Length: 321
Image (cartoon, rainbow, N blue to C red; front, side, top):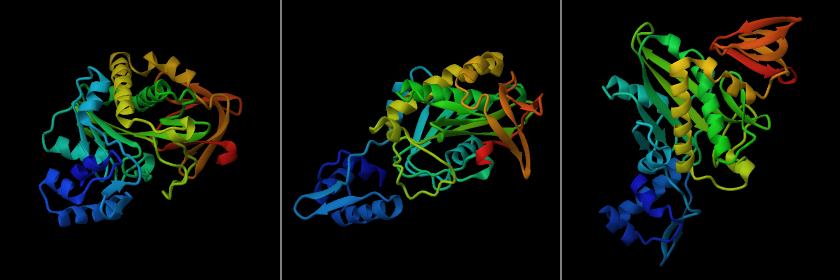
């Protein structure tokens, strides 16, 4: 189906005979694949007797070579798949089968995309970025401390470089625009936490998804298309994300989160805001002071500064909690 989509992505009419000739299959096989495109991927195909088939609108598919070229000298090979359950899950399968890190995996869609704390991540076909980066970590998990914050900073910088100047950060690893979520980060580890392990950095960015989508999303969200008023070239954006990740992950490996803390704070959207820090059913109310060198959130609680960290914590503005 992906090969057929590549032929149709220009949005022009193509005859069934020409498509079959390009792919080496019959016209009836082309017809079956077109039906699968509509049924499985939700892609609308116009069928006009005497003219052939075309997509309802042109589509730019992800291209690994173009992404690598846009990213520059990262040293990270890029792979693109049409459909996966989850890019993070597939990366772990490839690591288990002997694929050596580092490498980057993107998918046009996810059937079981995940966010923090097991939440579903809406992943329609060819609209957004679903990207996972596999890195080898030598020397234990201490190097990974606050890495999700550093990754969030890199993603925010990539969005700003792509024209979305309003992109900012919410602790610990969400990127917001006008109070609405536009990107999220999910870090997962495998291996020996005291020695050699792998960290898989999953990044999801709402790029061209329309706000009237039927996707079930349980929090306010937005997309780059919504704010910039135009379609975004996802190959250019993916390259920019990888370029920024190369820079900021390198700084993190060398000097830890403290080396980028000031930059993170400069994009921190909730500093000074009254929040509720949720841990299960417990809530701590306070005002946001910032983050410390280890990436923990600093809150003023009843006039006293307290520091909190942990993967199961969630921050909400008090009027939303």
